[in-house]
Length: 187
Image 1 (cartoon, helix red, strand yellow):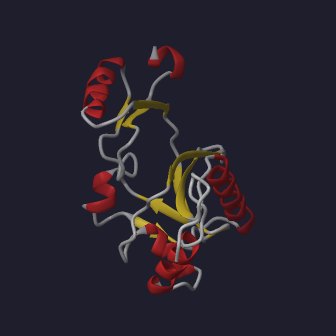
Image 2 (cartoon, rainbow, N blue to C red):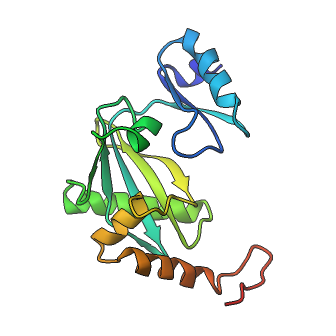
Image 3 (cartoon, helix red, strand yellow):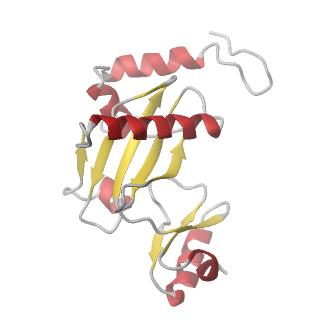
């Protein structure tokens, strides 16, 4: 069904994992069952998505404002766990190298996706631009990494916001933000 609906290659991944854990690019039907079993070992559903090759970008959102776009470059086939945490040849470009109007287009798309999915406060939206330049939102992360070398702090720093100020802004937004039950968090 996956092959008939999406064609090959596809990306198979667990729906609830982060850091690209459990993700596999599948190029042929024989590898599909193996990739599914690997992804199913984690909690939640398993997703299969049409493979989109091209450049990967990430846009951090702080409040209602997108931060500068970061381009993620790796010699690996995709930005997987090894590229994120183990490889020393992954590059993070900020400025991202796009013309200003293209960067702004990705920022608008990221903010629209963030709002469309009901996200609030802060987060990160990952986007792939295919070889034709068409952007594809591939993930919304509502709890992105916050170490001093994570992508949100990197984008904030490019916007002139140091790590301590970033944490204070995130906390300030959260205090007073309505909860889903309509009550307000106390400060």
